[in-house]
Image (cartoon, rainbow, N blue to C red; front, side, top):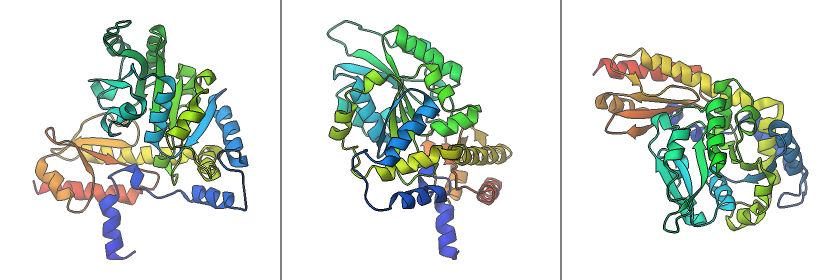
Length: 351
């Protein structure tokens, strides 16, 4: 690797798990799918096989591959909502903070965003947001949406997700999970995927793969199949229907075959734990949130942050509090972590 290539790698190492490449097994699956002709729009063998595998993993579900997470979230919510209805979510939720208003523009619904400790909703927070029910002057709550793991890297336990589902259902609402990193949450909890979704009473899931070694592929999963009746049409209107769907489905199928997802997510999570442990041992550095998946949030002195940014790229999460975010991926190596930890110690020593 040339000096320039090595520097470029350092620059992007911890900015986002989206920066990582495609897992070789996934590339091989795409290449294998690129053999001759196949029916378009989901009538291919790979998509049919994906449906069967998803049902083995999650239970009696309907599955719809899509291009990206925002598209999955938006079309899932638009399918189960009417324009005068609302989604209750944490203020840090991806649908609220990082999707440029797409859920509200596309569905016409309103997001009711609530301040939530560690990024996690609770039944009490949901109950407190249930105002104006039946009042024509107020939007009507319809969905509770959680990000799993949260945007702060924390993970809902199965018990916490179940409690939210029960609270939502008791109020006549649905529970949607934005699972862009769901596999990281499952590994962090030591469970399967079904145990933190279907078994908890989740109604709709956006299942992510791009952040875990896919070239690009997510899926909308309906645990209540009656809710999926409109989705074919919403997905098409939402520009998320792939004509050559076999290439999206082949990626998702490979991620779920042989539990490749456990390998990719387990490695990313382990690297995050290593990085957090290294950071916690540096004077003046504080780990801001529990490290339960593949994200590490730390509070740094401003000068330390600036010195690190000379050689590494990462996001400042809360400028006022000095909190930054470091992400690990399936491609992060122990050498990457150790090199970054050494740079952190050097930057802190010069403080």
